[in-house]
Image 1 (tube, rainbow, N blue to C red):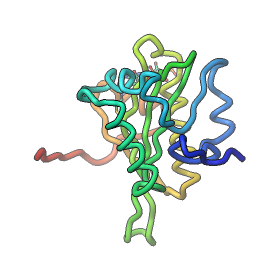
Image 2 (cartoon, rainbow, N blue to C red):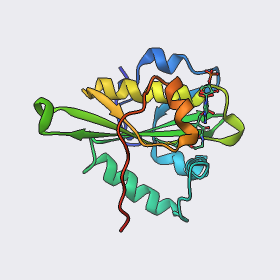
Image 3 (tube, helix red, strand yellow):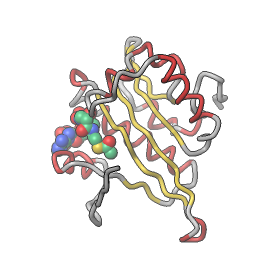
Length: 169
Ligand code: ACO
């Protein structure tokens, strides 16, 4: 069983070995590491949306917060190929009072580098996140997405439910 290292956000053994081994040769799915800033983590996230101009120090501070105060709640995954981050995804684990103190996983920040799209990496990233959710005791995972991505999430086994509402501050 792989151990948590100080450079790794969470224990890699939470990712299903079957899902991890389903990635193509040369592609590795793993927990976010401290060194991923230099491997293009933000460039990959910018395929999804704007990130702001975040420094290496700011990244380290957020990483350290997630691995201490946010431990057991924040599970960021990346896909690495040839020393570059080509995919990102996050699971945020919410512990509730309802449903017998149920635990729900929220899927966020799914992004695949443009030149890597269409290779089933997004689908496998979702399967990897689903496995972390199951291994951390979630009874379901939920997410918000734009209509343009509905077909992708249907392929990943999700179905449309409810309606999203938002208020910005
Ligand atoms: N609409 C409909 N079907 C799609 C779409 C789409 N937008 N994208 C992929 N698919 C289909 C594929 O054709 C494939 O179908 P198949 O199995 O029949 O061949 C299946 O879904 C799996 O596709 P992948 O190859 O795994 O998709 P990819 O690796 O390109 O990842 C993703 C899809 C994540 C949407 C990628 O295009 C991306 O990063 N887009 C920009 C960022 C983004 O919008 N992220 C999602 C935000 S929502 C959130 O984070 C919760």
